[in-house]
Length: 507
Image (cartoon, rainbow, N blue to C red; front, side, top):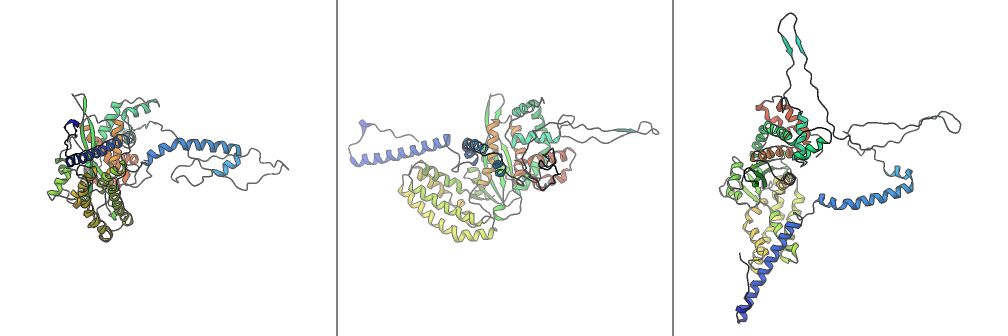
């Protein structure tokens, strides 16, 4: 759409025409102001209406350090007795951590007054959290050979254990550590190589990449089974994000896509374990969701991307749309300046979320009944209010665009009222995609389409383990050991993350 340009020499003399042109110019200016404000927020502002707690903590760190320094100075002036009393922490540290006790005792147990023998009347106990820096060790495996003196040529030896890298350096625990560092802690392989070099271990990036590739090949059946399990669910969330991939021969990257398909039935008391599977595709074609969701028949909660819409129109899935996307449009208008219509729309959406907070964790029937009683009246008033205000504002204004978006997707936005399994928004899968955005930011791009597929496989297992309360390092180590030892393919379900015993998560 072009920008209106007024030629002062060619302006008409008719007042009515001038007023109409002035109104059109004013609408155009407001539209462009809204557009510029949105660009500025997108470039310089937070990506979410809420301030990320981690970002907030970064801003508070310096102030907290200054307060701690001041407190330390005051405490030292007050004396060590006051410090000991203020810092007792017995019992605050996790019980599963190993305890290494040391006793600080007096040298002379004779009374300084009468030289009589002192007797013990109690003790002070303090616990402090300590750390042993990551330390490499070498596992030496010996397999004795046995021969029979009576039977010439007979040699007996225990079979060698299987490994991810046969004949190579790493144990399965080290391979799992490399994978978790890259895909859960967002530390690229070249940085990991530098960390290892500081401990005198020379492992180049190519070697680490070889380990990751071999592990991804072994783990592929578990990943495939995870995807199949998700496709059998009655309800899924879906979203996508860009995945820059190196394009060999062109000296630059191409833009692929990571699609995320997530399940989380906990808000309505479902018993299926939470899970997420990422799928890489070299493009954002509308055909991709249909390929990925082949065999899925249920409720798909998504944004308004046309690829999902085609699935709904074909009757393959039931589409539920996301109120967070609709709300965000009004929020951007309200954040740019006074906007009574946007403010009122936000208030009405907030009322829907308040109802959701009251019914979280309830059975689907209870949720649906409550929504029909409390949410339906809000929506019944919301729609005509939106239509009335659409007629009042300029058709080119951001407010009109926000209203049209909401009304054009009204059926999908209101589907949650009749189905207690549906959430108000798509935030479950958006949270699942966030870790991949951090990995993408640090790694910059995947080295190839195959590398991006490995990324999708490994990240799926890591994030699903985290969703189920597992330490992903312990889970991947045990799974790689089982696969390297020849775990039967017909029992691959036993290796899915939710089939493992929960362990204390460190991620």
